[in-house]
Image (cartoon, rainbow, N blue to C red; front, side, top):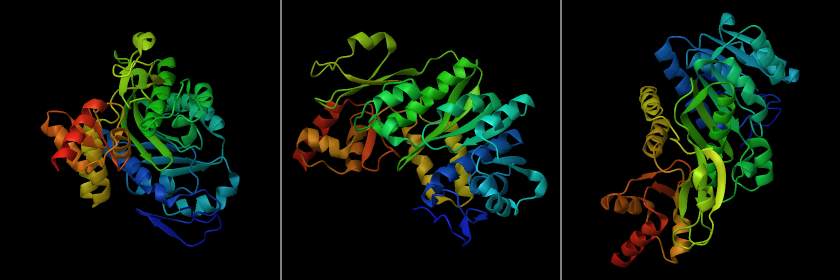
Length: 373
């Protein structure tokens, strides 16, 4: 749901009270904003300082919440649209005057000004439309070493593999459609961020990766270069449903071990952990302390999936491939765990799960469950 562009009634989110005015504002995206607030608060507790740059602030809800809930010392709220001046000034007036600044620059101008004055930030929120490619270099040059970048992608068609030519131009990757394509979208953004960071002599490590509806959000920490290279490809067999990861050196031999035909490849993309379990634990504890039970439950699911393979199996796909009535998802997870496999829920799809069992082995176990029930 979007608030109407002429909305004048105050809207409460967290500790922020706002009017959307002419801004594009989606109340249903609050979970993603909540996760950003929690992570920024954890950073503030760890480092004892928090300077935030809100690149495309819109109506200012995130800027308000970073100060009021994450206890940011100072925030720069910027929006390229000067028509937002009245609404943004009014919404941020509830903050202490010395703890924020409002400007109306393009993102390019904003990053140039920060670069010229060597102005660096602990936390940068880039909530852009489409793909973030044009703005990543600016973000990476403006964030402090050890700081956090919260990046948005809204071009779900490209990220989910329905426009591979476009993904090649803007992501430097060839993305194809398959049942786990929403996770692919997050990993494409992580891979893009990693490549852009490498060009600047930096690295990124995911804090969390979150998908909701058609919105992809990743939070990464910018670090010095690490030894590992987590970039690779996902291979999918459209004939039998098999998934596997494929390294650069395996590209010429990427065939399905069950059916034999070449795998459909997507990538390069990030194949490393989707989340950082230590950060998620701290965020979950803070969510519990704040009484955010829904977010604590979400973070628990994200912890369980953090180190699992970079794809998931949907219940519907298993039923279609096996031509059978599939048992309930939780029963399938329990069965896999009893057989010694790792298996977990995934926040990416409420009717799916992650496991290190192959798709064919999972089908066999589901078939035995159906026979025994």
